[in-house]
Length: 300
Length: 213
View (cartoon, rainbow over the protein chains, first blue to last red):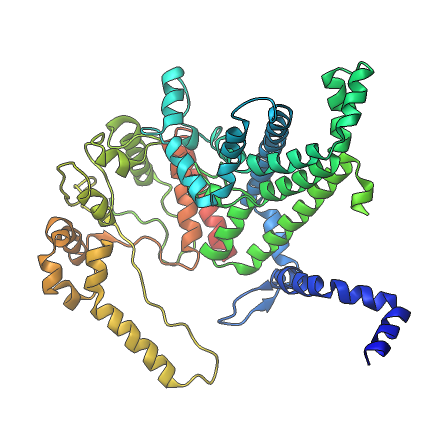
């Protein structure tokens, strides 16, 4: 029996391959593909399991496109992503380079590394509470310092122009440590000989960075970028706990809008439609990121 | 002032008028002129830190106040515009319609649970800072003897029993309508738009929500 099975699998190598990936595919289907498919299905209905749902086709999507509040949420999501992605990637790379370059030669780098990574261990609710207190108008260390330094300093979380950047900064503080670790791992994989040879040939540090480090760091950069894009576009917890989308709707991002539509206004079909649009936005932006980094092999 | 936010049939907003403007201007002035609260400040935190003279808030702040070091007390809403109304809201126990064929025994069991919760709602009143609507529970001996009731709860109960608590929005889109009002009030209070602009925007948004229903 065992021999016959082995011979069968030998003749049909495709089936063998499928068996290897089956556990992953099964989990992926149950926990990702099926929920997304079900979400799309719901988005085509005026969903009301108690009284009976009614098929409405794309009406939920059309309703969304006609609603100024939805477009405000989309704009806020892009604004937030435009702030937080460069901030996280830039600081993550800077810290990774710092730890990588100075890690073996300067004291205290291990402590700095741990200190930078520590916020990532916190849950979003703790991060939001910490920053809400830090930015409190009367008792917050950051806000009070700002007000002391600049008499006209805005109250960050209650100023429509500053609330979203403040949340972006808190998010960067939270997430940058993990990006640092990923990028640092990428840096450790760069052969030292390449850098030494380049230095012998007269390459300056910035030339080594641009022509050797960055190209060889692309896979780690891509991984970090994809994670950051996803985090940025589906940001929710920080907004909910720091501003609840306010002041006004200055920080109401798409995930927040989706939550309110689904669980506060009980318009589940419309919320599902917003979720599908958010999914497409994340997918599109991730592909843009991959294209920008020029990693066609990873894309394939 | 006797105004209402919406008409009786919830077909349109009715707050965008002189009375509405006066009420909103009062709210804006509370933050920007009167100093009861300040823009961007966390009122309850400021109050327990002794930085606010008056906090307009609900009974659920009792726990926070009781744990603070300040000398404090509750009072009924003052008579601002002719009648000392205050906004109120309610928690309701809802028994959803079950699938066809569900036996009456299931509904009976659910109603027994609901009745039990209502009869013992004095416990929630004492620990949650709410006012039980079940009058027998309002007369519970432990509740009447509690610090919460003697210092705070009886005042709101009197207002509720005297018909001075106004329950604002009773409509399937109530949360959306409240949000439309809240965000525009916020913008007016923070000085981003004028009270009149806030009323115009809120009216347009509320009417759109009501028309889409």
